[in-house]
Image (cartoon, rainbow, N blue to C red; front, top):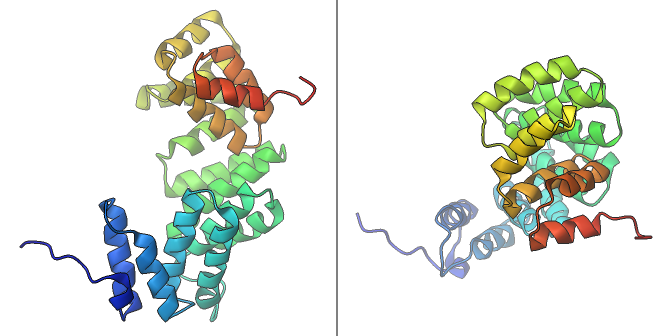
Length: 264
């Protein structure tokens, strides 16, 4: 069948239809219509509509408007939490927690991450968020425990696997870290963060050469690993990593400069 163009957003009379059209536009990256218009129509029809508010929160988060993401997620949670605080869907709690985290509001983030882990569709992300907060606070044992909970739900999340391995190293469990990393490098041989960990744990020249050889001076590899370390509350390690990789591309150099002490 030939697809038909959806109604204009202002002509939609159902929040359900507004949400489904918005989802279609997001899925296919539509060039001439914006999902924002349909989700906004949905919340105009019902200000507490869970799905449209959640979709708006995610879009705002992805374009780094974290206060607005919190606002939309809060609207979604007014409906979701009206009857109980652990609804079947925990995505609104998870996105609000992540937005709080990005703004340095870690206490609020922790509370929402804990709410998120009650729900099956946000359990892995919620525990990963708690692991990031624990790592930021230097509580490596708790971080390891949260990583393990996250991995029970989603065992192939490479970011969580990398954080788990780093926390093993930082907590003095080098033998366990090495054995785990050997398997991970077989499973994910193109993961640049794993190769950085392989160098970081022992700092041998051969490991440094392997890591640099994989990255091939590509800025995306430098930015990915540095970004993960920053998200884990370890900017000093991120600066050290960028210095060791020595990627002479514009964005990694800008990031490296931004991590220098202010006196420099």
